Every structure is written in structure tokens, then in C-alpha cells.
Image (cartoon, rainbow, N blue to C red; front, side):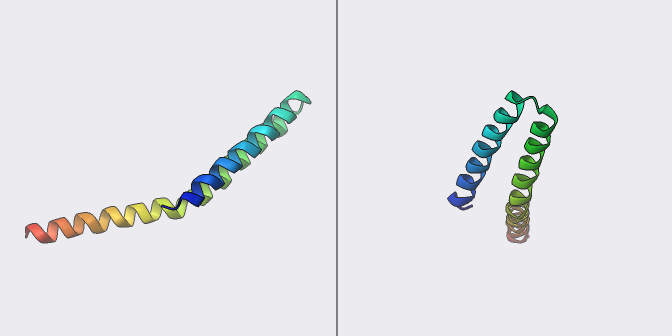
Length: 70
């Protein structure tokens, strides 16, 4: 996993936290919740390829272990 994705997630988190605070203080709680939800969705979309790669690695590792034992 690249370090860049960690920095991207952290940056998105900081931006969403600032927007959430500003929106809550201005009395727009609904928009703050939607902004937070959008941030979570963006981060999940960034992580889906990484999770798929992890599952492929784990699958290939266990296939390798099973074939060695046989």
C-alpha cells in the first residue's frame, strides 16, 4: 500500500472536519451531515481497490500454501 493514499485520506478528513464545524456553527446541521457522509463515501471509493488487492493477495497466498502441502 502506498503512503500517498494515507495522506489523501488524512487531507480529506481534515477538510471534512473543518467543513462540518463551519456548517454546524452556522446552523446547517443537515448539510454538515451530508458533507460528512459524502466524505466517507469518497474515502470508501478510494479504499475499494486497495481492499480488492488485499483479498487477491490473501487468496493467492493461501492457494500457494495449499499447493505446497499437497
